[in-house]
Each structure stands twice: as C-alpha cells, then as structure tokens.
Image 1 (cartoon, rainbow, N blue to C red):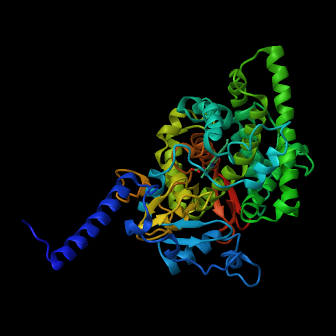
Image 2: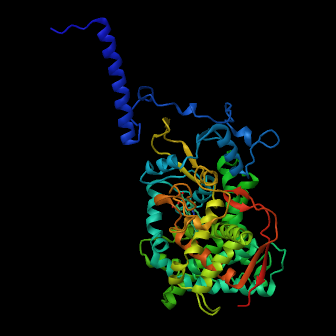
Image 3: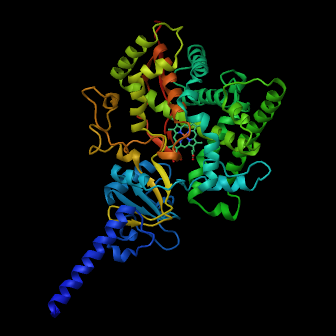
Length: 516
Ligand code: HEM
C-alpha cells in the first residue's frame, strides 16, 4: 500500500495549492469575471494596491482638486492624467468621491471594452438626470446621455435607426453642403481677421443639426440672430451652460443638499433647451398633422414611429442640442488649427479637393466624401491629437482583471486615450500632425493599435452620431480649404477639459481667398 511520508504530504499540499491558484486564475481569465471567486484564493492583486495619489478618509483624493492646495486643475484633466501616468504608470487609481481607475495601455483599454456589459454604463450627467427626473411632466427618463441599463437600451434602440445607418446619413450631405456655403459667404462678407472663429463654428453646427435633426432653420448667421438675446445665441449658450457644468457636478455632492450656483446654471440652460425643443416639436406635430408632408429630418422619422412617447422625443431633442453643437465645433476648430499650421498637409488636401470638386459650383456628394481619403485622414489625425473627450468613461457592472489586478464592479473606468495617443511607444513622432499615418499604402502608414484613438467611444454605447459628425466635419473642411488659404495667427492651442475639450484660447485664423 502507498504510504505518504511527511515530506510527500508537504509536496502534495504545495502542488495542490499551486494547481488551485492556477485553476482559479485561468478560469477567471477565461470568464474574465470574478463574481464567485475569492480574490485571495485567485492570487490576484488588490485594487487598493494600484498606484495613485494619496487618499484621505472622507475626501479621498479630492484634495488634489482644491484651489490653492491641490496640484490638479479640474479644467486640465489631460495634464493631470499625463502627470499621473509619469508618476504611477499604466493604471492609476483615484477616489474623487467614487472609486476611479485611469487606464492608459491600449491593450488594457481593449480589455475594458471586451469585458463590457450587454448594456454598457457610464456614470455621468448625474445632476442632469436628477433635474429631468424631477420634471415628470416633461421627461420620462434622464435621457440617452445619463440613463443606464435596459432603460438606456430602450431609448437607444428606438432612436439610433436613423442616426447610424450609412444610407440615412448620406441623405443629409446636400443640406449640410448648402449651410457650409452660408458660412463661406459670411467669412467673405463679414468675418474680421483677429476675431475668434469658434462662435461661428458653433453657429454653423447649430444650423446643420437644426436642419438635419428637426428641419428647423435658426438663421444664425443673420445680424438679428447674432444678437445675444436671439434664439440661436441663447440655444448655443444653453448647450454650453449644460455641458460645462456636468463634470464638476458629477464630482460634487453639495448640489444634492441645496441648489448650488452650478446646479442652477444647469437648470436654467436645460430649461431653455427644453423650451426650444418643445416649441419646435409642437410646431412640427401640428405641421405633420395638417400637411402630412415628409422630410428627411430625424424628428420626422421619430414621429413616424408609433411607439414613441412625445416626452421621450423631447428628451432626445435636448440631448441632440447638447451633444451636437460644441463637440463638432471644437473638433473642427482643432482640425483647422492643425491644417493651418501644416501648410504641406493643407496643400495635399487642396490637391485632393481640386480633383474632386473641380469648380466652385460643384456640390459635395456622398461619393465625393467617400473618395476624399486625405481629408478623412486629416479628421482622424486631428481627433487623435485633439479628441473632444480625454477618453471614454465606463461604470463597471462586474469584476474584471487588468494587469493581474482585480478591478471590482462599481469602479468607474476612464480610458486615457488622449494621453496614450500622444506617447511615442504607440505612435511615431506622436506630436506631429501626420494624416498619412492613417493611409494604407502610404510610406508613412502605421499600424496603430485599434484601441488607441477612440474619439467616438466604442461599442453599443459609442457616439450615436459618429457618421453624421465625421461627414459634417469633412464637408466643412473641404469647402473652407477650397475657398481659402488658412493661416494660424494665434499661439499654440491647448484644451480646457469641460467634459468636452474646448480650445483654451481663441481660434485665430486668417482666411485668404483663393479665387480659383
Ligand atoms: C466630432 C463630434 C463628436 C464627437 C467627437 C463625439 C464623441 C462622443 C463620445 C466620445 C461619446 C461617448 C461614447 C462612449 O461612451 O463610448 C458620445 C456619445 C454621444 N454622442 Fe457624440 N460626439 C460628437 C458629435 C455628436 C453629435 C453631432 C451628436 C448628435 C447629433 C452626438 C450625440 C451623442 C449622444 C446622444 C451620445 C450618447 C450615446 C449613448 O449614451 O448611447 N454626438 N459622443
């Protein structure tokens, strides 16, 4: 009979322990979750061991954001993120009121998205959600931006049909083209060199989204509408007023106790957007009832679906006004900045435009956009260097593993794509604006990690209007370059991180007519 010696017993126990650890770790890796497995047994490292700034009871790492004593600037999150990466590495934990993890390595970013839930969640727009849920006469939900879970999917699947399909986006090329011509005429007739160009890009994008989404013209380039108390000026201000407070309110808690000035700013700007949306909606409902005329607007398509509640349409219209104007205007500002500062890229893009748009009378078509490879690469490259958001936020709904650490459910993840996209280990000469790096067949083509630059997010929760936004940017850039030589007459342009990344200085462009 086989007899264990003491020594054999010890070896067997050790082997069993190693096997158990290996078995648990590999089953965890296979399932990518740890729901039923004790972390200690798995040998995974604890979340609290992830490096990060010092955390105190109650305030966590919020002290870093306090004026005077803190070394973080709440409006320079890109810089904070870069400093954190230098100091702590590829994973950085923080506790600014919630358990937060910054993720820099694109392999880890891929891992976050691959392990994402069926209903990917974000923890953002919390105060806006609170505001909307307190107005059940106007809204059914907190809206697409702030809602999570099956309720989010119900909204998303209802509204996304006409946003996302290539066919439904191409329908809007002609109308966008016509509005960009209004901007071109405005620059020729009225733009004064030295003025900030950003407000006019806001007007352009209000006009474009007004027409595409609601079949509504704001006439924002008219003298009357340029007045501060006009409908277009107030709508643009309300969209900014809503967006600019979101992130600070997400981090804070005082607004839960009383109406802080920032919460009141949010209330007022939401109320204005809501008023604009409701007026447009009521006009349209009446119009469609009496005229039964069809148009290509998103609103018309929403109204054609019998199962949509009008309150959900109001919520979606407000979300559109909030999400469309500043984002596209900032993204276009940075693209113009990079093109103006890189005359050789401007030349190449112009060559492509001349080949595709031989005369000024030719309109841009979907076919032209699909052939405008260099233009599209300029958009991509500009969004790599200057994405509208520093990264993508996700609220973990199950435990996941990153770099041998157990990241528990309930953690807020921020993928730091902007910082990573500017690191030499991932991109050659990362700070150089080089559209060719995206063009297959070009000697400068680089096989860039697919999770490095994610300006529109990723997966089922990614930007609902990605195609539309890219199309609008291409049309704007093509006409501005076709008509004018761009020169940058300002200083280096950085970002203010106000949920979305606003240029930190005025957009100082000189437009020299080409007359060809
Ligand atoms: C260059 C312009 C734009 C950029 C860079 C951009 C970027 C983004 C990003 C990064 C997200 C979060 C994605 C994620 O969590 O995975 C997002 C979400 C969203 N965007 Fe955009 N966006 C742009 C333009 C627009 C426009 C024009 C609209 C509306 C017409 C819009 C509507 C939305 C909405 C409603 C969401 C929330 C989607 C959801 O939660 O299901 N965006 N966008």
